[in-house]
Image 1 (cartoon, rainbow, N blue to C red):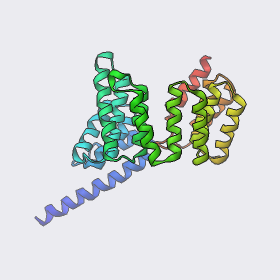
Image 2 (image 1 turned 30 degrees about the vertical axis):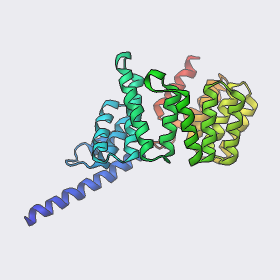
Image 3 (image 1 turned 135 degrees about the vertical axis):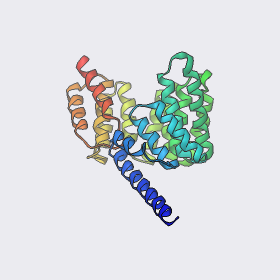
Image 4 (image 1 turned 90 degrees about the vertical axis):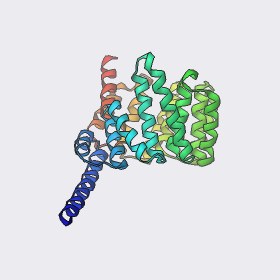
Length: 280
């Protein structure tokens, strides 16, 4: 019994060490290394399954991601983070599915997004993802403007600046450009963040107001001069408006040379943008 207890403690310690190392790999976007460490763990807890699912998700294997995240949610059904990642996974599967199965996948995504918000009504990421779903999904899949309006109100009650940004998304969907701009400017005033400056720059560029757009990008750069994300965002704004393509190419090449985190766009997306420049 004593030997068995020692072996059990050693196994638990080894699993914990593997989980910690796998999380470090994940944080450095080395997703396959994270997967390779997590898969052999004999008795995975909810945290291990969740991390495994996230690593599969970030590597683009959404079927395996769903399986791992379903196990995490089964182990801890009231963990809003786990439920949110499962919702994102079904959302991606819906985007990639054939028309016959896409509706079912989208329905699951909606249910899990709504569940994540029910579990934690102040979870900004869950609220924003649910808003995006309602704005983008067709009514048959559970999308809709009235539902989106309710979520915008919920976001505003949690964070005023985020609520203004959310309202701008709703206005853009309705093509109410002046109102969207006003709400984005208010969002920047209430809570200046690089991402909010970039959102305003995107809208201004869409309206052909390129000098103003560039000023907002410059403000974002001034706030976070070493941010890899801004290299990508600036390039994307230029490409979407079909201008400054030489500079966009340079920005993307610099981005590909950076160390990034899971919160940054995947480098595969940067390579797609480079190919788009080359094809133009």
